[in-house]
Length: 80
Image (tube, rainbow, N blue to C red):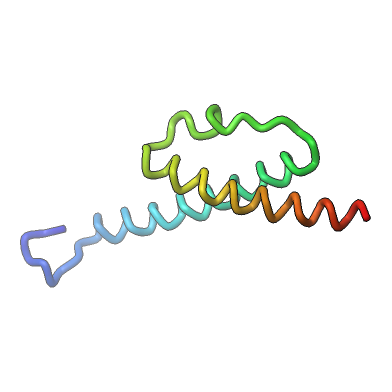
């Protein structure tokens, strides 16, 4: 941010937009890998998160676990 805290410059706005886009992408990946896992395909979460920052990894793993549990419950219902 610039020295004037009441003003957000275009770089800050761009970074915020990139952060939102990154989170959307990570959320999509977490959901996709969780579904793959529920369908019996191997998923190496360490490999998926290897280049992410610590904060991104923690966020991704939390979302992945949430979606994995959700997908596993849905899969059990499908198989009944």
